[in-house]
Length: 253
Image 1 (tube, rainbow, N blue to C red):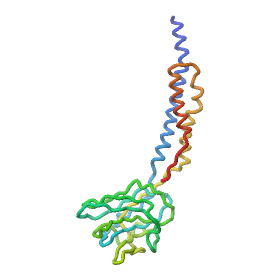
Image 2: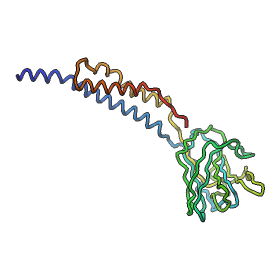
Image 3: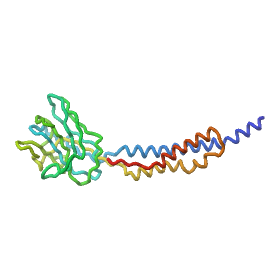
Image 4: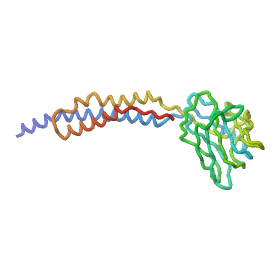
């Protein structure tokens, strides 16, 4: 009886060892796939334009819209934009947009991005985040704040371009409303962050590497005999093969 029990344990040990080896491979594969998905969802901020240190206390008044033009840098995905609004008697909203910009006439086409943002009674810094708008490097754009009919004190600006001279502030208003100061030597008070989004091809390669770690051994691991372990392992392989063979979908920003 003891010899028979020993034989039973001896015959099962290689299967258990093989399963443990496969578990390590599966974990490494899962890590590769997770890194690929995580990298696609994230981006690295590499360029920051910040004119906040230049603010001289100036605040826009008597205009309906305020624009800040800029040149898209090499890492041209606009991640976020921060600006500052003055206090207001009644909380309201403003419309924030990103538009292609002509330095002699203003917006050259419709908005590429738009979002309603809250203007609290106390004013303060307004952060427009998760923009994820990929622009053309070297092309001119503008962030436009539409006050939606309000013409009191609004957007902070400064009578200088100490920190940034590749764009400028402009205002929309007047007796016959139009864009004014299109070539002004001023900036609004803002901070723009630009990021680099990982290339889809690199992410696909990382994902396929993870899938490859699963593929080679799974066919050999699945034994022909029936049993609980065999059925669970075959089920695992079926699911993972469906995931790794699924066509990759790259969503444009």
